[in-house]
Amino acid sequence: MIRDIISHIIRFVLLVLLQVLVVNEIENLPFFINPQVYVLFLLLLPINTPLWLALILGLVTGFTIDKFSGTLGMHMAASVLLVYVRYFFIRATTELEMHNQPIEPGIAQMGFKWFLPYAASMVLIHHIMLFFVEIFSFREFFATLLRALSSSAVTLLLILLIQFLFYRNSYRRNE
Amino acid sequence: MQNLILFVQRYYHFFLFLIFEIVSFYYLVQSNVYHNVTGYDMFNQVTGKVYQTVDDVRSYFALREVNEQLIRENAMLRSRGKSSFEALSKDTITINDTLYRQVYQYIPARVVNNSVSRRNNYLTLNRGTSDGIKPGMGVICGDGIVGVVINVSPHYSTAMSLLSTKWQISPKISDNNYFGSLVWDGHDPRYAQLKEINKHVPIKNGQQVVTSSFSPIFPEGIMIGTIEENSIEGGDNFYKIKVRLSTNFETLSAVYIVNNLMKQEIEELESKTNNTP
Image (cartoon, rainbow over all chains, first blue to last red; front, side, top):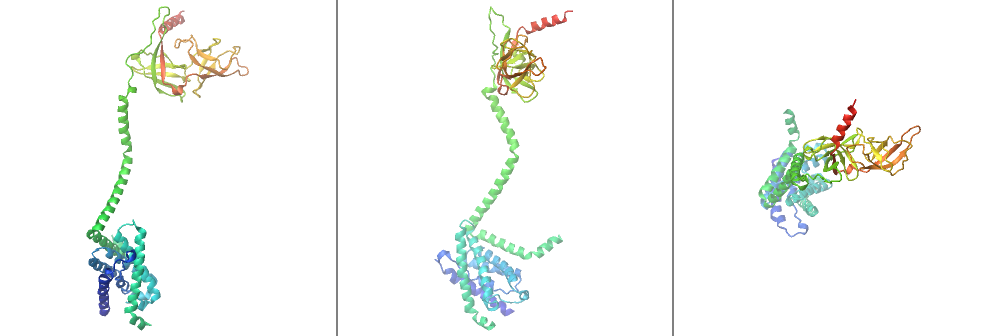
């Protein structure tokens, strides 16, 4: 239990640092692509995390990223939405007996077939929220949507990459 | 209260989510200049829309009052306009002739109210006792006869229109001087019915019907109308004649009030004669 919490904290710190120090430094991408790798932390919260805790964690994660990038509120709003939707997505797509187990909804435990649509839809919702909050208007709707879509694709790619790189062991172990 | 607590308990996740989103947006607008400005702009637009709508609704309810105000103002402006003044000179036309004795006097008047759609129609004219108008005077216009004055106030008078089922006059056919009795049946303001013309009298459509000298109200020979249709029903001794009135009562505006200077004398003499044992 404690180990799990520590591993989550470490993952949180690493992903935030990766996001802030590496990914945010990559600029001049086409379509103003801005991938958000840190959402992986929220995606991998155990299935049995109570929603209130998940919401608080989403708020804290978003706040941290916002503090580093000076965009207070933007990532908070997007992350809270992601966590909220995630709860219902997991409830709708997994077995009932899994809901109370500390399962990490990653490729390692849930399999690639379940993880891809899960990650894709969550990332998409997060990014659409994020970029529309950033623009704060629907005036350039399609430009913003394109930006959200392309950024989501890149984020998803990075998330899958990280999963395969760092969880390869556990992934194999489970097989 | 219990229900409220149950409700909150049941949906507290959603409320938590909502609160967190509100917190996020609060920070967003508070700490980002762009979002602050855009947000205020948006908010201003929303409040502007709301106030606009409220104002629209309110102005709708105020319409009656605004209308009354405008009517009052209109009336004030109208009463200052030229058309609301009438010449103070009493333009009574009097002709002094040494060979002829003047019998009729014409006083120009304007129709201020008129109707044609009732069974008994009345006109209101802008001349009254101060202009020498008395009940019983005739009213004519350029096209023909109009009616007879029945009520007089200091500056106005009402006249019974020819279009009245209560009133009948005795006109004559101008070609042959046969006279009958003209009544209005109360239907079409363009036509009246001429009665009591005997069937031996030659009648042609298009003949003119004019006032006779029998009535002290109108001068003789004032146009009334032309015969439009005539017929004799089987066994009847009198014609049924439809007269097209020459006066267009629907557009009546300028009329003359006829003052028979000798009327009183005639009436006195007639009543004396009638009362002779």
